[in-house]
Length: 267
Image (cartoon, rainbow, N blue to C red; front, side):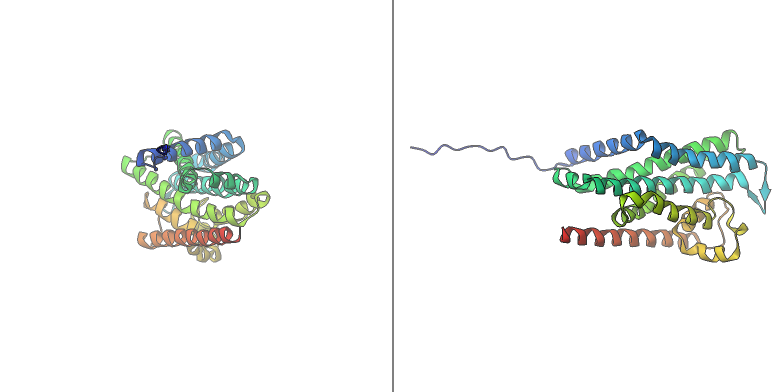
C-alpha cells in the first residue's frame, strides 16, 4: 500500500510587489490615523500657519539688515512645522502605541517590521510637505513673498531630509520616555530648540549667549540649510550644516538601535 502524500501549500515568500503593497498600505493607514487624530493634525498644521499669519504676513513689508521678514519666517516656520510633525507624530505617537501594546501586536503579525517604521517616517514627511505647501501659499498670496520654482524644489527636498532627520529623534524619544509624559517632554525639547535656532526670528537678534549655543543644535543646522535657499544663511559653509544634520541623525538612529536591541534581549 502506497503512503498517501499530502501536498502542503507553502506560503509564497515576500516578493517585491507584495512587500511594496504592504509598505504602501501601512503608510496609508498611518497617514489616515494621524489625519483623523484631530488633536495632532490640527495642532501640527495649525500652529505654524497661525504663527506665520501673526508674525510673517503682518511683517510682509518689513526689511531689516537685508532680510525680508516674511521670506525669513517662511523658512523658519517651515522648519518649525516639519520638526513638530516628526516629534509629535513619531515620538508621542509611538510612545503611546508602545505603552498600549500595539508594538507587540505588530511584531506578532506577518508584516515586515521595517514597514511599520517606514510608515511612521512617511507620515512625518507627508505632514511636513503639507505644512510647507500651506505656508508657501500664504506667503505668496498675502505675504508679499516671491518664490521661484527652483527655490520651491529645494525647500521641498529639505523638508523631506529634515523630516527624516527628526523622525530619528522621535524614535529615540518614543523608546525612552513614558507615554503619559511624552507630550510634555517633547515640548520641553522642541520649543527651546526652535527659539534658540532662530526659527521664530533672525538669530542675530537673539542674545549672544544663545547664538553661541545654537550651532550645537540640529534645528539650527536645518534652519540654516532652509534659510540658504533665500540667501539668508550665516557665513558657515553649507557642508558644515549637512555634516551636523547627518551626524545628529546617525547618533539618534544608533542610540535607538542599541536601546531597542537591549529591550529585545531583556524581554
